[in-house]
Length: 396
Figure 1 (tube, rainbow, N blue to C red):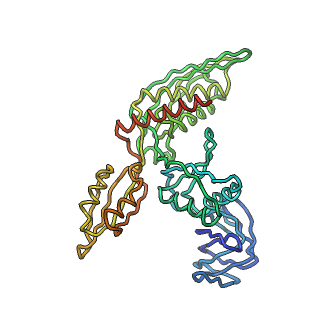
Figure 2 (cartoon, one colour):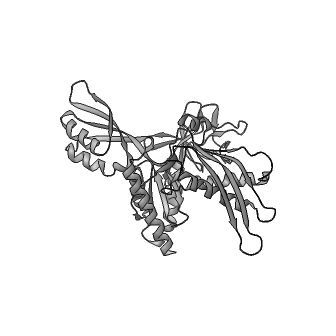
Figure 3 (cartoon, helix red, strand yellow):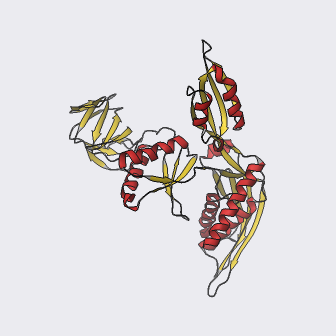
């Protein structure tokens, strides 16, 4: 199992743990995840920064190898076994940041850096926004993204311009709602015609876990009012609606879409017509199904000297934090606080904590869950999204 990647002057150094069998210099191994066959040209045992060349390694050894192009958590075998080891749990990213190189000539190094970083860290994601064409970096928090921007500067000599961090909100519904939607368009020649009817309803967390995906499409059509070849298009339309919700344009989760009936036209119906019809039906119906915006909530652990307890607790409460536990250490000099705090309220907390505790306090943060935002915050987010859409339309 490849568990760590490191860039050296000789190329990528891959750290591996051997769980079964033996590795020998000159042998071939297969990457179970992508099927690539690789020759072991050089195996080394690491002692801090020193490398000791070895000819073979056995089960239980941790070794490093050169010349292996892989990702972190890839499984390797001798080619006879096709079993991949279960990867560590990788949570979904909770914060995004638009980044670009300061100068155009840095573009190549910028792309190399992002490719390498996403290979070595499965919690870091990179995507290009289809509308703005910006490169968006997503990770587990403000510090996580700052570290990679600093590494680009230090290791690849790429100065980055970054935008404001964006919290990854999600949308959901709280009530069942029926839909009966007609999509009809005539523009010379064959037009577009599709009609779908059914309902959407919320899913519980247990159902989502059992299903293994955030949303579900159920086809309960009887007869051929919608020809069977258009069912996949209806599901694609549902997926389109789930990528961008109607409230603030964020990803939608926790919704079951049930298709019950519809209608088609012998000439004007098409895959695209049913896909557009289904997406529009869901987006409009969501507005009547008690929609809400969900924000990521983090588990924050703060370790401080006990004399600063009052100031730090007040600071967490001001950031809408809910204190879960407070443990004093044995001699009473230190305190460990655990709280659930909305991620949107955690910007700049490290600076505030240092100033409150004379530099003696420290904290760690990890994703807990998504919970509904207060109504006033939801209204602000909806207004901001509406203004952004108006600006884009005006610019177009």
